[in-house]
Length: 229
Image 1 (cartoon, rainbow, N blue to C red):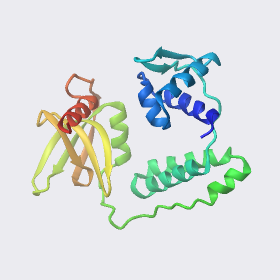
Image 2 (image 1 turned 90 degrees about the vertical axis):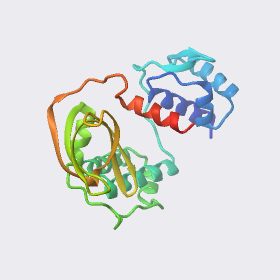
Image 3 (image 1 turned 45 degrees about the horizontal axis):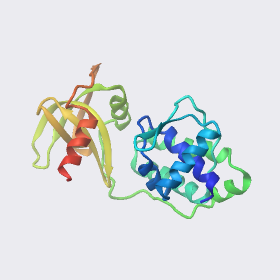
């Protein structure tokens, strides 16, 4: 990778994160040594990029900094195209439409040679027969996760037993061909994962919830990480 491209990637990587990033994390992402990261950060600062932090603590890019228009290489375009096709195959209609629109926006601003490469992608994703039927509105569920609305569901477990749950929806996880809803379940007073294809009825409540210690997505991730050690 050219050094200019690497510097741009470092800025992109920092811009996409709100928490400080260590030199070790940057080095692993860029596949270079930590000392090279130190030099790159110093050069970026010298050129006027507002990077906050220091070695041993981590680096953070000021959120008001505007990154110059980016460009993609052929492999990146293939990856984006393939990802959009997968969403069209496995996601809900709104997510699939957004993926197509994103690719259209990117293709529209590409130089002619790259636009031709993008249209001649060598990777494709097709609809699968193993896709499971989902009866609830997956788009509405995604919106409820973002807006932190309470959700009430009727859920049928693997044994065929049905129960009613009131949940704080936290995130959706796709493990082909299954969509899982990770949530804090008020009924069970613990975290639960629900197969979306087993949710028979869903009602999005009018009220929203506030994050509470021990009930957030971060808490769930930390618990899972602790079990994996």
